Image 1 (tube, rainbow over the protein chains, first blue to last red):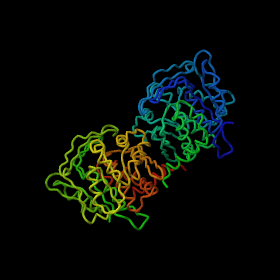
Image 2 (cartoon, rainbow over the protein chains, first blue to last red):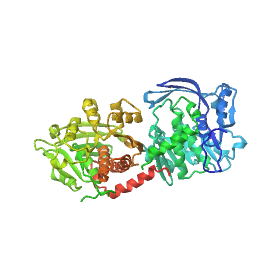
Image 3 (tube, rainbow over the protein chains, first blue to last red):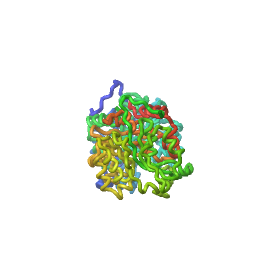
Image 4 (cartoon, each protein chain N blue to C red):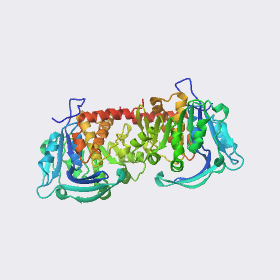
Length: 313
Length: 313
């Protein structure tokens, strides 16, 4: 069994993760890496695997070697839901971050086998009570929910593209979501509200029980029926590649909730501590490297340190 | 005696505040106000007056009417150190904030009597053990320190202008400062470090015991020998005029420290809670209006609410 952070309850639940699997070429002020494992499902799964059993759903192409599958397997991630499509290569993304990482340009996208991806769930996944819908097309996110007979706790993430071109489908989806996670610029785009507090409140009125607005280096804010919670980012001084930070945050967040089988206000706040620390590892190296290798002891140390950083006493 | 927030100690100390007194014309997306009371010393003094006895030092011109002095007096602010210069009008600033308040342009500055201002202290102020040096020329800030025979706790603020044109004088000053308060863009300008954590650490190496980097709507971070403390902004949804927010933060911060006669790590953290809440009032109306009238009960309510916002439990 993979190295995990112990839960304080005995009834840990597995977590269903659905999203893209990709190969990325990433250019940052610190260098360039080619054909590295990426995609929301990869980051989410690695992050969540520190907390609970992950059931992963995605599609890989004919260029996806055993070495990458073994990386996921070594974190005890269940790959039954990962479909292999031999008709072409894996989804490919190339992006470049500019000085200070405050802007990134997409230089190339090749959907490849992702173009015909349909997230059909294995039978064994259909009892999942915790579900992470990574930022794929909202109709595909909805298709996942339609296959789940129960009443799972659902975290959904999105990206600006869907706000722009699939707004109605996205609005229909978020009505069914337990916890909607979105970054601040997307929150403004979706609500028309530049004030992050007002934007978060408007998003909750759109249906989800809770909303988390991510502010990158400035942390995140939770909007919940029982109140708000603001958390700073972990004080990273060695930023290398921000790709996957948001996915790692989401994965660790719901992974921690699933491991405790709880999703009340207090549980979500506690999970945000772990999510913040887990995401901080991702950005310290290219791709999934640091996230994958950091180990649960490092995450626990960071969580302790973050609690100190926010303690007013 | 003015409405104040009670200290938990019996040995409250008075606070010396030195800075500009001004009349401002402010243009925001919500309207325009002319000839309103402003300047760092005014905001700092109003804010600090909720916590302790303020001794104010500044210069006013021949256009400064009793009605403005009475506003300060009604907050029990000691005006012995306020010099009247009949040779001309009070310092004047005109500025315009743009949509979303993320940029402001200075449209006019008339130094007037401020041009010849020399902050000579009344004898009765020279025993001050808590000193706030508002963002005036660093040589004038140093002149204030030179008149204080003791070893006071000194908070200094600055602005980008002095970083650009009086860097050496500023560096000499901050070596003598207990707590240096600066915003994030100025911190980058002064240290060359875009990462706020590294910038804060570099600033501490320049001499001050503690540093607070202010991040506007994203809160503030304290760098202290005993650790760091990150605090979000108070969730303001009704932003009207950000002028004076930083000055109010500084005034309330050291006002609270003076009222408790403490400046250890824990005391500075506690004071940042009050400073954040006091500054949040300032931005909800033009000029000093809301800050001046809000009352200590409102600040105490906000402090309680802010503690809830950051509580991970």
